[in-house]
Image 1 (tube, helix red, strand yellow):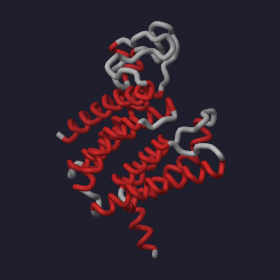
Image 2 (cartoon, one colour):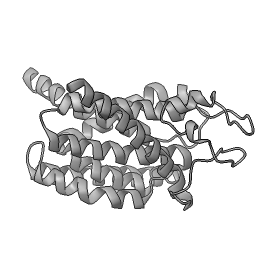
Image 3 (cartoon, one colour):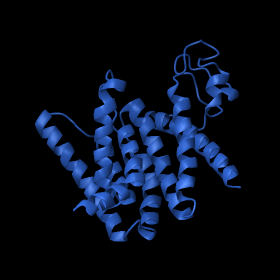
Image 4 (cartoon, one colour):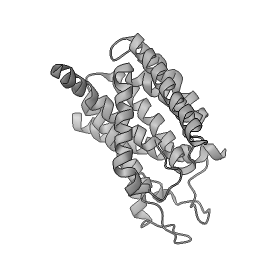
Length: 250
């Protein structure tokens, strides 16, 4: 029975990721969310079999069947990652249904804003407004530690990112962080709470330092939300153990 649920979670995660990636790419341009996906090159509607998560990319042989231009492999990779997160999340949290719901809502939020940041260098307020009430209320009602730590995490995440944006603008005379990034980290702070929010920033910065220039060195500005996403997941999974190990050394 467990493997059936894992497979179902993987399929559900891949399907949600496929849709939310579309939302993240269309919403900043005020495009309708109801229409089928279109080729970025010729604008033709992609056939239904090309929309099946992960395998659809291979059905169309990685290119538009109308104009022949290549379809970016980032789409099936997004969907694969989303499926693995949903399935892995179930294995990690199978004994805590409420926590699984909270974290999958968080994953859905991060998937949407990651797609938007990569495509448009923007974190849409509309996405934050949809997810924030659910995540904040659920985390306060079902905290990792205490409701106070959740609220303090939100305040700390917001203030730290605001200070970084203020310093970046003062130091470099240009916007270092957008308002969406600042508000996003307020939500991340609530979800991860005060004891993990700064660790997520550390992981995000470390990942960006290691792979940022090598993988997307030609992109300017460099999207930081994908690193925040990965950093937050790493902090959530490994953060408590690392904190316990650190405190044990004191």
